[in-house]
Image (cartoon, rainbow, N blue to C red; front, side):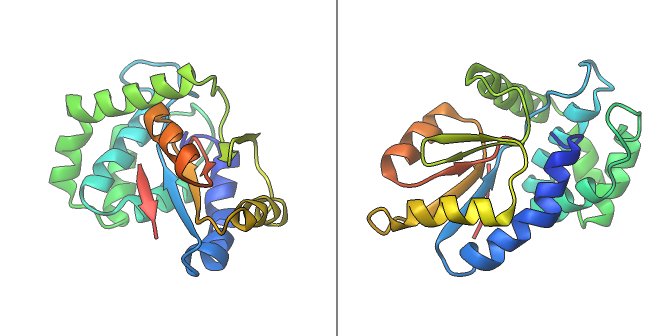
Length: 193
């Protein structure tokens, strides 16, 4: 959830270390699926607006810049700061094309995507962000690079697997990846390789 200050800390402070240490070495893939759980619902729900924005930015290949710009511009939960106009301004600063972004942001497709993703996460019992899976172990809350590295290294040592970090909540993907290899899931479907 883009209103989650702990998710922002993870995204801006911890995740770059994972990228440098594991992704760059080809040992780890990080995926995010964005959920909207901190807002009150309705058309002005800032969690929903920012998650739809992530979907729309991804449509233009700008997911990661958008995510980092949004997290860098948090001003508090449910303060009215992530309204449609401000999110669009942030997205444009992150490099999206404004007209296509605005059209996508108001689309039923973006709304349906985020609603389904959120519903799946809630169905898995995820009600806090970030929630992470390393292998089949659920980790809730912010963990530092040392703790995450130890958990990732332990999974990588099992039969030389490639690690996958997910901020995701698709149960079909979850099962497939648990069977096929190590997984770290952060529920906050995009890959950074």
